[in-house]
Length: 442
Image 1: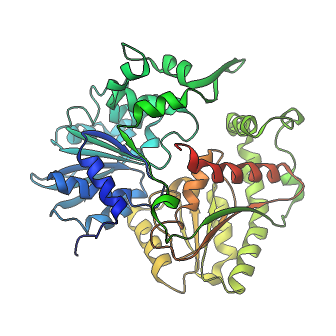
Image 2: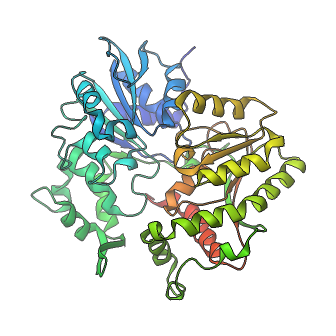
Image 3: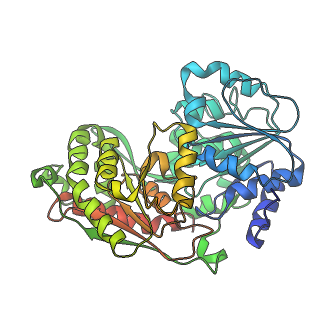
């Protein structure tokens, strides 16, 4: 297959990466960061590449590798011998983070890669996560991590700090310590010192909590030489718009959509409200699942009506596997494909291809964490969030599966809500945050 012809902004992104050993390409989702990274590697003649990405992202990397200039063997990291010479090895964050996968990590560390690409790099935002330690070492100083000793390390993400500036510390400390003097410090900052400088922090009875960011102008200026960020509106004149709206649906078992939180939460601001939801996630797990199930019939009826009215295809996102299975059952006449965290890799690739290419397959139902990044679903222009993630950027990323290069129509993402309940506010806040998230680095 012939190499891709790059758009002008992609040539700029390629050249930006190729000029830097450590860099972050932070374009909005849908602008082809994978394409730009491989083109930059080709430009430099980097033959041995390790890609670390979400499990679903392996589909996109395999597809994109077909368009490379340089011939490389493409393989999944599975413990099999890694050959000498040009090779592209693809590992998931889950693989490198599992304690029992130390032999795999050891093999990857010894494989003399020229480049490590960390795709959807916000997956490594937590210093305590095993996947972050696997990449950057136990204290985010590279020692012992997969990036240790590798000449080039490039980060790809449309939402590198999904919630606040504290989530940049792992990347900065590991890969960009030279910015500390530009930030006014003559030494490396600990995570707590970084948070004190760039985050709004408060002490609560539950411990230290981060409620937002501050001093972002100083941080943006210091990171500008290392990060490149473009918006779709700035570089794709021919890409139709992405809009977000709330959509009311009927629910079964109204008692399951009653308020999930005590009345004391009703007076919180939207930011405080989302923080409270996330902090209560374990406590709310049962109620949250019941709410999703109660919305299934109404969500399916909405999708059925849309498809019967002329829409070619529709994409639905949910959180719980039970909800996904019920939606698929209700919409069986439209030959749905489903993708969740337990879907085997070959089946993920087949599901995406079928939805994109088979006119009879009119519904894609994805788990928002497993299918919300790194895949292309431009066969549809209608997206619905049945169950939202309480991390704002996850919902925006999910909508961008349809709103990306190749989309010829405006994309409308609906947040389906149960009227007269706390769900209405949850969906309203999530919808507004999704609409705002694109400005995180602006």
